[in-house]
Length: 307
Image (cartoon, rainbow, N blue to C red; front, top):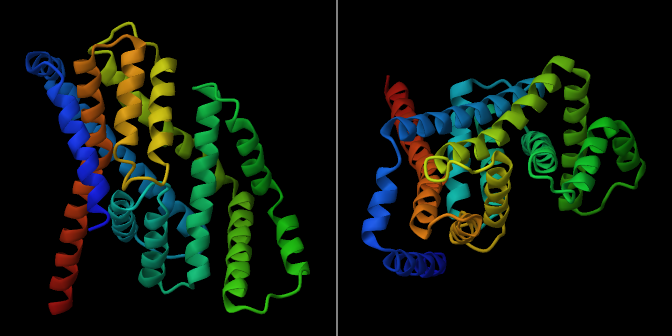
């Protein structure tokens, strides 16, 4: 019930905001989105999800965790569903991925958590690089330097942890084991040039597809829009959505993106349509496709068990 309260509040504000927009202007804005573009954006979103899954699959494989692409997709879909119902930062989704990964492969919890940590290392490093290069956010530079340094000196960090006295508490020992496992996997990937030379560009591509989808949509309403402006707005809305306030970042994403698009010079109705469409594409559509895949996966698993 507590989770439903903020969702209800957000829904109420969104309904009130939409009521303030002229209905004819809103319908006119919707009609400006060609069917071919809508289908193309949905296709790009599916490709993005598959690329993310390929990234996870490669990291697990490099970490000596045997798992099929389909099973990894199931794990990721479970995580995506949890991401949608937990507030910001995607902690719930990452915990779900680690638990499902351990159950599916029989690997230790620390090893599964380490796979999640390594994926985050690549993903956040690529995000910082995109923020720095595309959006020009200098604040991303120290984070990028820190993350890259972890990638290049994991052996020193591991030696430092091992040199410390072993903790007395169980949870402390598990945390220590997690860090050591994560550092071992980082070293394994670092020594595998083929792996990291693929994972880094792949992570960057996944992040660049995010503002690219928005740009393709925005130019239908605002042909003079610059790709750097749109990338900045896209990443700003995403960062606000990551704040642990509302489930899935609902409310913060919509308010930020709509406000920045209006500040750019767009009509309120156009900005609202772009925001709603992108929110559906990157949030509700992802959750819907994940639910469908998880349902089909479980039904097929039950059928195979009966046979």
